[in-house]
Amino acid sequence: MNGAGGGYLLPPIEPAVVSALARGEELDPQEARELRARYETTTGRFLGVVDADPADVAQAGWGVVFAQDADPAIGEALGPLLEHRRRQAAARRERRYREYRGPDGYRRGESVVDFLVRHRVTPGQPANPDRMPYYLLLVGDPEAIPFRFQYMLDVVYAVGRLHFDAPEDYQRYAESVVASERGRGRYQAAFFGVRNPDDRATQLSAEHLIGPLAADLAAGLPQGSVRTLLGEQATKARLGQLLGGEETPTLLFTATHGMGFPNGHPRQLRQQGALLCQDWPGPVAWRGAVPEAFYFAGDDLADDARLSGLVVFMFACFSAGTPQTDDFARRALGTPAAIAPRAFVGRLPMRLLGHPRGGALAVIGHVERAWSLSFRWPGVGEQVDAYREMLRRLQAGQPVGWAVEPLNDRYAALTTQLEMEKEEVAYGKVPDDLTLSMLWTARNDARNSVVLGDPAVRLRLDLRSQTLLDHPE
View 1 (tube, rainbow, N blue to C red):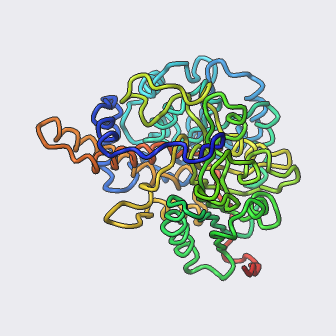
View 2: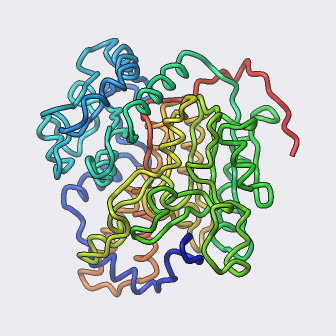
View 3: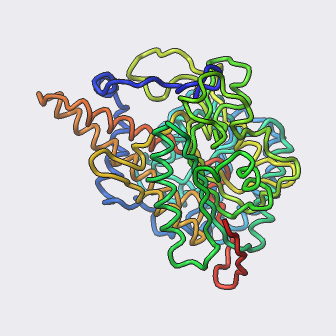
């Protein structure tokens, strides 16, 4: 939603226009090969880690990647987390724990292929933890380590990112993760889905994303383990209770519009990606600028919020971050106008992860726009298998970076199918504009789902002995 002027941030676009953009885009050859290799060799399952269980950090390994010119104080602040992961990842072999910093860190302008080859790793192969750990934490803002580097590294590895404004935020996050992994908690999931009046997008996500996922996750669990807040229940005040308040769950999944602002707008860096709640009366009843009372931003997270052990998935535009230029048309259009002064991580996830009272474990969200094609395909209906598998893995206590691999599988499959369709057009097939436009949009959507936080964190749960509370709605 356009917070400055009201209405939708992106006007309707004809399939023929999007199809032309897709056909005009030239995918990097190495990127195409890696994605096709993943698609063709996995048959819907992750490419794998050589001779290792990817859910076991001691087998899969763990590493941290700093920008080459990173402030040394950041590494010092992360000390508790680095030492904790060293003990885990190096338990069997020392080389399965790595720190890439200084000359070994990420160099500005470096591609994923350049980075891998420089560290003697063959691109496009399954992760070999004796060469490079499977779990990789990028430390730095997307100006220092670009979002695109994260997307491509995530094709084979389980990648997360941390960025805060001050070293003390890194230290708070590190201490929160270590403390969380030393204990276990009671499992509870919450699904929060708005259904704004006269708004097709949130009506679709409420019916075809939140509803089915909540019902599926609740099956087989004790009553009260999973709560669903839809429509009129999905207010800003209620979200505040779910994010650090009395109703904070272990796992929170939200589906809302994300707030967007014009390039350089005073509220852009602070509130882009904030979650628009049920308080917004819809595009027909509300025509002007969207007030802060309608959406939940980082500034709305209470100072006394309790977020320990929480993992959040936010299905919303810009919920994880914003690139400087439009990711969806950057290469197809050549030189599109900038949509932000610089690339940045969203303030809400930064505040969640680095909260003064202890941060959440991880936030999974979108860089750029999110689209309904990720969960519903015209003529087919709801398609939530990737999200369902992700949630099942999280519920089973598997690491976040491994849990989100089904989304990367989808990215590889959609990219391969799109490139095959474009090849046929190049050889004379009449373009199917609707199919091309849907494949291209869905591919971009799958690619831009990212993990913020350490990809090796996991929900620390004991489902067998938990004491459940009754939460009548």
